Amino acid sequence: MSLRRVLLVKIWVTTILWCAPLLTFSGSLFRFVGLPVPTPIVFARLLGAAYAALIVVYVHGVGELDGGRFPVTAVRVGLVSNGLAAVLLALYGIRGAWSSWPWRGQLFMWGSLAATILLAGAIFLAGRQPSRDRP
Image (tube, rainbow, N blue to C red):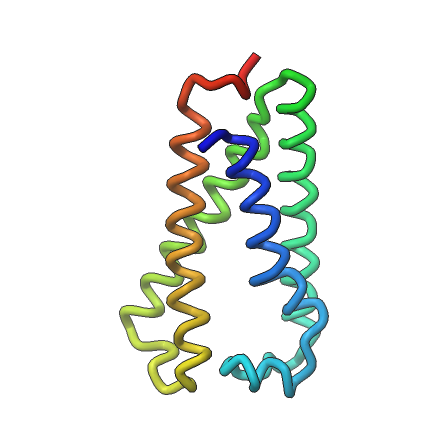
């Protein structure tokens, strides 16, 4: 998969799974998904804003690729954010941090772990491969 496609997938996954829910979900929506309601909610909103900033980096990375430049910053940010998220989710998951949550919440968290591992790997591989994305 090309780096451009990886970044576009990263943009959509980040928006749908993490950014939009953290910025917009009410307590009842968090509960419906099977997640505990963050209290105070301001910390969830701030994390959602940080995800929005990451999306800006990835959008600029796509623009750099379209302009014939390699998106060094987008690749590095993607590796660090997804790599660290994967490590943290794995550690907490192995320790059973969400084992008492409803099945939907557990699925969301294990799915987030899978997504961060896959995205970190895809960014690493696509960012290293010679491709038509690179000038």
